Length: 192
Image (cartoon, rainbow, N blue to C red; front, top):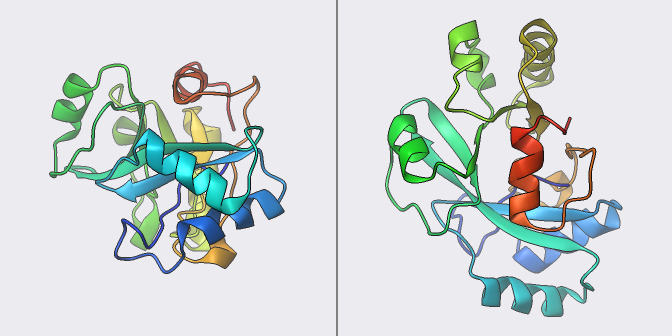
């Protein structure tokens, strides 16, 4: 699954229309996409309309999460029941959405090297180690930290352009059909 991508519809920083983004992910033969706009959660009717416009059947997953600004940086939120419009502390995010999957997005970007306590923070369910928003060296540092500390790791392309979509997918050990399935698999560390 493509776990981290943005469309020009709701993320000002993106240059790709939603229909082109999902078609590109499908073209790469992935099973689906989770659209993670900045502080916006797509509604079910919007996802349904996107599926029809893109000409994709129900076998291709289109789900929605969101990327929010926190005191530790950007966090991907999967399974929240509403849009989180404001910046929020990680503690308040976890308290407000105890059942959501929380993933620290691109924590190695700009040369950051998070220490063990940050990477193993129990309020986080996973760390995004591969991202198009990190350099190859930063992705390597993420991989190295994952091998050292054994946290749950995902990858996400952080696509803001069509050619970026689907570059760094996450593989799951069990079928994922709903956002709750996705959260369960992340929390049980059945992904890589």
